[in-house]
Amino acid sequence: MKSKAEHIHLIAFDVPWPANYGGVIDIFYKLKALHAQGVRVTLHCYQYGRDDSQELLQYADKVYYYKRRTFKNPFYSKLPYIVASRNTSELLENLLMDDDPILFEGLHCCYYLNHTLLKKRIKIVRTHNVEHEYYSKLEEVEDNFFKKYFFRIESERLKKFENQLKHASLVAAISPSDYTHFSKKFSQTFYLPAFHPNQEVNSLHGKGEYAFYHGNLSVGENDVAARFLVREVFDEPIFPLIIAGSHPSTELLKSLEGKEHIRLLNHLDSEEMLNYVRDAHVNILPTFQSTGIKLKLINSLYIGRFCLVNNLMVANTGLEDFCIVANSASQMKKEVKKLIKKEFSLADRDERKEVLEDGFSTFKNAGFLMEAIRSMKK
Image 1 (tube, one colour):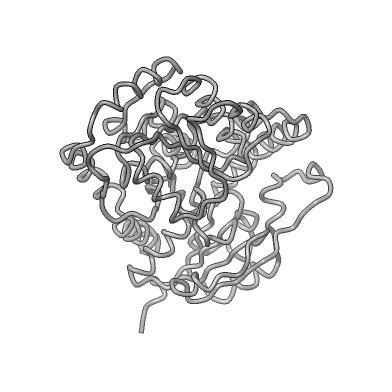
Image 2: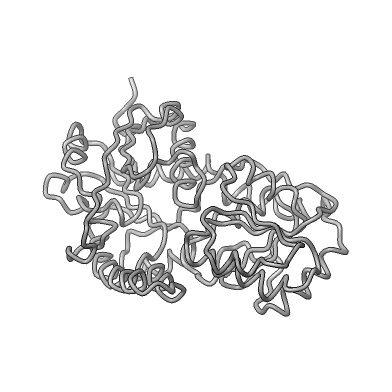
């Protein structure tokens, strides 16, 4: 019979299937890796727009779904909206069915972190970002007045709520830079790399026929990055560019007019997206936020060829040596012109293998997480 140390509760801020954007990718492949380690997981999902998933039952012992609350006035609560909307009492009841460890995914799920009935439990918080910094950056790139004001207030609330992490037994930071931030305030912080779908580096050698940018375009940061590429880097037809992502803005669509060398692909599924990453000659990934770690960067290094980024995408990730870094539009344009003349070699691929397959192994990191949890029981 398995010991209780081999069972945990995992609270997800969204249904983590399909695993087609950053946060749920980390959750789903963490769940899958824990299952591969022989750990039994009871999965609790907050639900808003995603259906129940049979896929999750392959890796979780049980799956509970809770409707995420909505408020007509998102400024009503003193708590962050992303927290106050995830406070179902049924979740607490289900957590109290046993005494096993609880993994809270993001500040989003931490409404019950300091609840008196959970005081003696081992509680791990997986931080996906420095959330107040993330929302502050969303405010900077947002044009809509209402959304801009919401992001500002939410950032202020999240900065205060972050102090709740003192009630966590462990804080699992997703990136080295996030580890630096959280470890200054919470001594129980450790670095747990992002979980992802890759087992080994499988980049194709040779040349591809296009540059590729992908991201959820409904997120202001990604839409701004896409517009930057269209207007400033690929403003002339130096090389074909494909942009993939859902819900592009009107501004982005307008910027594409008359640019036949640029294609926009909407609503790709995760397999199609990975195929475009794999076949591209250059995965070009600028960002204007340095929070967390971008899972699209990890995927691009595991299965893509050349990876062209700016400092904010790659700084303090440990992945700088495997990317070409350019920070201005003119520098990026110059690097694209250089790269289209080069073939991606097997030696280029092998340089990545040791670092990625060791430090970012999902199986190893699931074991590392469980060892950290078990150490709390001693």
